[in-house]
Length: 86
Image (tube, rainbow, N blue to C red; front, side):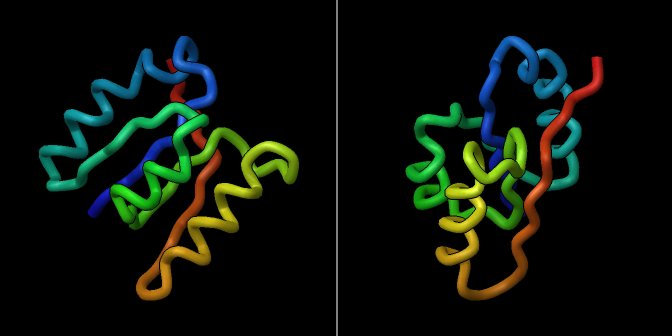
């Protein structure tokens, strides 16, 4: 399984993601971290099962959700608003 996590504020989110990435790798789940300006390239390159976006507001991340939904013709897609608790 492949997960893309779109990061909008690296100082807030990267703090706890390293440990999460290690734990997921133990379960054969790949976590890819991308900054928000390259979200389209990330989806095209990785073809993920799950996309974690910073928020689901219409102005900010709605284009990401729409693009990923259109790109993924087969299988399931899940979108989550991402938070890492410190």
